[in-house]
Length: 177
Image (cartoon, helix red, strand yellow):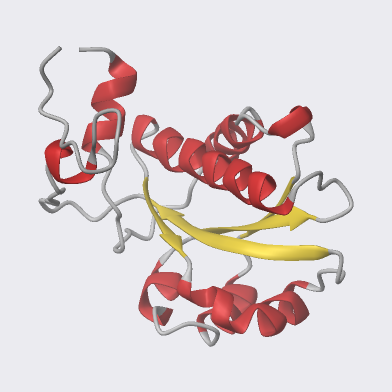
């Protein structure tokens, strides 16, 4: 099996981090992977804010029910849709999702833990105020990143046959050719 597939299948949401900081080299690698995500017309509609300041992290923790995760991370990356670069809102949101997935997978390869925080979107105006973000940008997510606390993490998924159909909706995929 390829390293890429192994990375995808082994990725888990990590919500507990050690006090060890994330290196600038690793941050740059994560951002580089993010910017290489596919986007319609190659418009690259994303902007990122790297957040390491403890006071800013504390302020952002007030914007989510998952404040413990935010407070425990040494690095947050806020992900924005740049509406001035937008060519189609839905397609650009999907591109942002691909960019976020690239970041999450890069974290696995770098030995880091990460979790995609979406619930914080309920407080987007407050987040934007804290981060002094102009109105043209739309908050898509905040990623919490850090060195993972060592513990076993498991996850389950629905079977492929529960999720997939062949040729038409009511014809279940069996995996045979």
